[in-house]
Image (cartoon, rainbow, N blue to C red):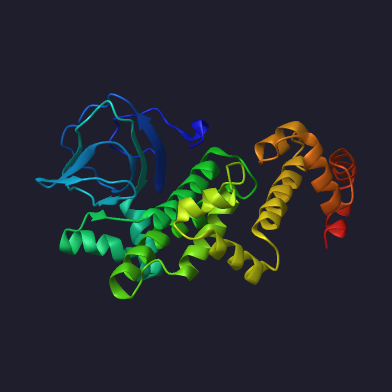
Length: 298
């Protein structure tokens, strides 16, 4: 997890923003909280720790990948069983008015909320593949919150809606179809994961272990669907990420090391083969003449 996404824990139980707030917390020696409630919805994504969520008089032991949904005015608190184990979680708050607005657009946004309010279901378990999918979306949202890119507000609205819909879809499909994390779902999740983790280890062995599928399946999927090997797919994605960052006037050295290239010579060769220019030439030409960028890449 990127350190710059982490927030210092704040015991505040009210929202500062009108629609939503999202945080990543990682704490050692965390103490059990006092029982409390609030007037917004809390989505809590558990990553690590030895603890349980106490909700309305019941303790629910948590395991990695659990999503907890706490509706407004429901009493709850975290119970830490071993404070020596790092306690990590995402906390995502959405206001009642924002949730009501989404549900007014489509009832699909309210599936989990309905299960919590009407049936008292608060804990939703996720296997490793689905948890990786959820975590990638949450990290993408956190990065957008902390960034300042063009279209930030529009992107935030889309990403929040997408995250909420994805959580609802996962639970709906788990309960209403023969959903077993089939290969199509794994493939879509795999592509999304790669796009969000270009700076991480994306070796075939690592991906196979992460998604609990064979290396043959991953290799075959990329060859069949993209016409290239997974190595070529990742290379193209990394080069595109580098190119985009360079056009934002970021330093070439910072860019290639950030996106998984071990040295400049390998980055130089791959970049020149893909775009026909050295990284320095490309940045110099297209920073001077942005219009030629569109012509070159059509």
